[in-house]
Amino acid sequence: MKIIINNASGTPIYEQIVSQIKNQIMSGELAEGEALPSMRLLAKEQRISVITTKRAYEELEREGFINSVVGKGSFVAPQNIEMIKEQRLREIEDKLREIIDTAHLSGIDKEELKEMIDLLSEE
Picture 1: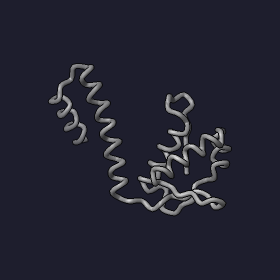
Picture 2: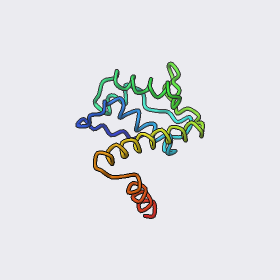
Picture 3: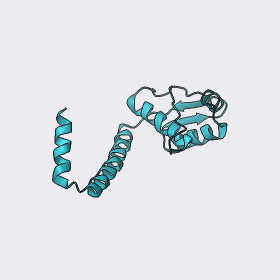
Picture 4: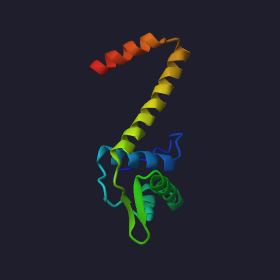
């Protein structure tokens, strides 16, 4: 498992960890049942607090991406294909909202946005 922390980012470290692990699970890089590094090991490797890794793992477990077993560790949970698709749709919607807001501020109308999407889809 590869995690890259960007200390210059405005995103909290635990959110960066959550996001990267989710992406690795959804892309298949981390397979169902695969063990994640212990919270202590991840904290040591990333030079961050164990509290930060604990918070990230708790968030991943709450969202159904991992299962934690006391004394054994944390493992990638079986993934529901519909849950993964729904997660991706939410991410796309968030990015589209941001794009639409930026377009409005820039004076770009809906037709210009559609044209841009069509052109980029062809690449």
